[in-house]
Amino acid sequence: MIKLLVTDLDGTLLPTGTEVSPENIEAAQKASEAGVTVTIATGRMYRAALPVAKNLGVDVPIITYNGALIRTVSGKTLYSSFLAPELMREVLDFVEGQGWYIQTYSKDQLLYPEYCEHAKKYEASQLVQGEAVGWQGLKERTEEVTKLLSVTDSSEETERRIGILLEHFGDRVSIVRSSAYYAEIVNKGVSKASGIQKLAEVLGVDISETMAIGDAENDISMLKAAGLAVAMGNAVPAVKELCAHETGTCQENGWAQAVYEHVLKGR
Image 1 (cartoon, rainbow, N blue to C red):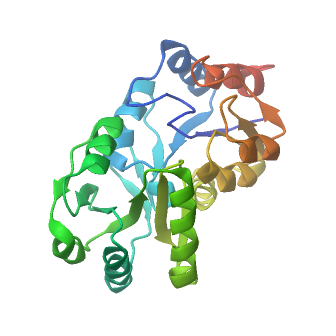
Image 2: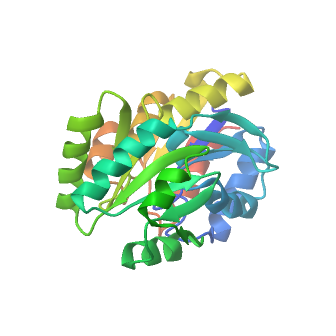
Image 3: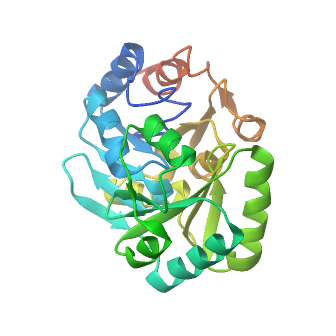
């Protein structure tokens, strides 16, 4: 029986922004009423995920920054893994030398070297506002940095940059592709999977009693770790191949369909 339900956000629970459909909200609340802890595991910032959690109407821990920070809706931090300042500066020096765009997150604040099209699009998609601080500013704002995010214009360029970054820093950081254009850099060992495992321990839930649902490559570790894994109908091929179950697309409220089928059925 499922006791902990962990969901991705973008492309899974909601298409973009923070508006969750009434169908998904109803399914989440019914699961919560049945005694299931419904929570979020996302690459998003805590403050970008918080409005979604509030929309669901459940006060639960949120796994954010791809597992680097677990914090409750009410603001209590349960776990954090921050990048070492010297390592962060080393990565930033390298990226600046390559002429790439990258953004950082210090104390749940979005920072970027300059306000450009990448920054503008990211702010619009996440409904957050960042701050342009220059490259030197990024290297100085190293307090409580959960991740660095490389943003590109194409899937091929994202893949190329991941390969280069892994070659130079792969022994010290984990790099995961969260969309065609995003490559996320976090501490070695940090992932949505580690987030689920730590949260399950806190809640006293066996990992076999967890269910995860997602659509993108950065969900794969989480889906592998969970007792039951469900792929969205719009998931990338690698996610669908991994999961034993598939539900409808995000636009079809496939998330709610999965909750009724795998969490509430028979309860």
